[in-house]
Image (tube, rainbow, N blue to C red; front, side):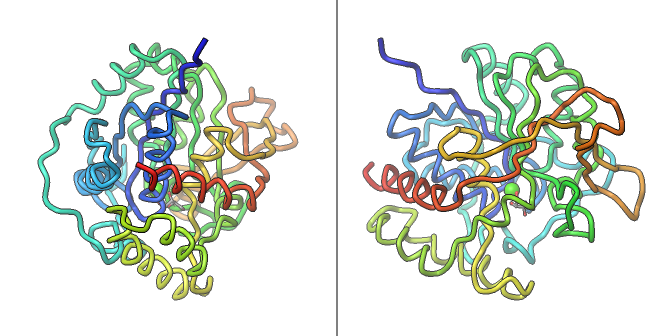
Amino acid sequence: MIATPPAILIDCDPGIDDCLALMYLAGLHHAGDIELVGVTTTAGNVEAYQTAANARWILDLCSLGDVPVAPGLTRPLKVDLTTTPETHGSTGLGYATAPTTTLHHSDWQRLWKEALAAHHDLQLIVTGPVTNLAAFEEAHSEAVAQFGAITIMGGAVNYRGNTTPTAEWNFWVDPHAAAQHFHSSAPRVPTTLCSLELTEQFLITPQRLEAVMELLHGHPMAHILRDVLRYYFEFHQAQGEGYQAQIHDLLTCMIALGQIDFEVVETTVDVEAESPLLRGTSVADLRNHWGRAHNARLVTSADMEAAHQECLRGFTLLASR
Ligand code: BDR
Ligand code: CA
């Protein structure tokens, strides 16, 4: 009997590291390792329609014109939207710019519901602010219970932040959504959480990029990837991190799909939303002081060398299309 590949829905905000995540998923989709059933976008790195236009362009360049893309909510649940052009460029893809496009799928909630109805054990990966997921949980808790797994990139859990001293970007942009998600009883499974302390260890250097470029030789993505990454290298250098880039969202996808070894601790995560000082700060109750039920599988370590090999495998699959 031929096993059905796992069905994947990704909610993202491309975004340079989101772009690499989409390319990786495209490679695995073409190889039949997964079925990428849809892409929805959040407002975060740039506005939601722009992130959707970027996702559409990336999928088209990766020969996935038939995978639907829909923009999600245009602003966080309760705070004004802040975007980060200094990190990802004015339109989100560094020095590259997506062509203007008309998106045919405008109803992201319908896309989620149809995907849930069509695919048993659908896996959701969130690599932007948690806005769409929190809103969907509130409106359709019975549907959320049908997700087979939910994996999120977000939070600087019991760790220093990259946006404030204690907050990571995705949770800082929409702290109420992140808090609401971890309070929700809608998911049937605990969220797998890939937080900053882990994901910032997955670094692409110019040398590693050149290895990817060799694999992609002649692929449409090869024409833009250097321009996309150069912006991210420069941003990280300006932050004192060196001329390289943290590829949070791609690592998160590999973990979601179980493609590399990693360790988790089952714990209870909460997010501060109301305090201006601690906005978006995330905490894991590792010693059970709160006495609350576990709501997260916090990823504490992953095999980074295996992640680099898996990255090359995914891009080889993409290039062989
Ligand atoms: C996260 O913030 C975004 O800028 C990246 O795309 C990633 O999802 C890292 O803090
Ligand atoms: Ca992202």
